[in-house]
Length: 217
Image 1 (cartoon, rainbow, N blue to C red):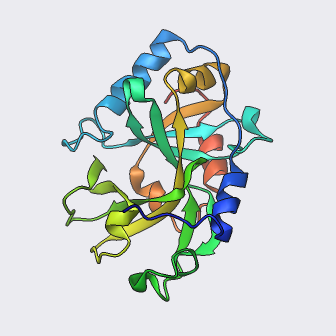
Image 2: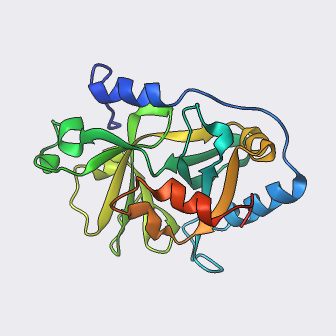
């Protein structure tokens, strides 16, 4: 059974209204290759990461102003080849606490952590990023001690460590993200994954946009 936001819950409509556009085009081969090499080594692999231990993020450029992805920062979670690419928007807090979003989960009663809007796909489904030294079976290791898990597995369990809960995710069909990067909609950067759990994400987009001026870092 998957943990979801009810159709009539205020969070469901709020999440759906935030995201609404997709794009098309082509990407230079060298840029696609660089992206694939980084993602292939870490996302969903469960293996010890190589290199500097940084994660891959998409940072929206000004070209996405006025769209559902304006000023977003997206953590790349999975590159699936024919299955497309998925990520979680890490700087879109909702106006709901976890207690408000999931009133029927006893463990979350009194929990005032914020529910984040991961993206427009499956906006009623819930996903969790965790930083823990004690992962449980079924969690997918992303990098270092950071894991990804569907909400139905995690929300009712006590797990030592830090967590962030997302409604929905960002998804691209095969070739779609390539087109958006090629058009200049996104900058692709590598950063320490600690930024995933920053308490205040309000200025995250501005910080990354000022620091990185190229499409690939």
